[in-house]
Length: 90
Image 1 (tube, rainbow, N blue to C red):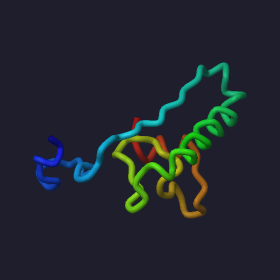
Image 2 (image 1 turned 90 degrees about the vertical axis):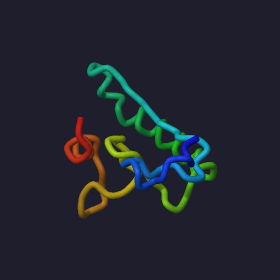
Image 3 (image 1 turned 180 degrees about the vertical axis):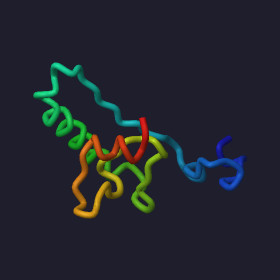
């Protein structure tokens, strides 16, 4: 069904040939901020594990998905959730 609509007809280009869309999500309560690096590490391990099973070129994300591992958030190549939030929106 997704292939029936031209990529130029809507602002969502991730259609042709895509069988699935994966949304990685992790969250925690503010009082758990001390463990935030552990949670992010778990997610990055899952993300890395899934790498062989997802598209490689282009490796892309949907607008407003806060993905620290795709693209760059600043000139030195380091990313933070706060920086991604400011650039990608709420």
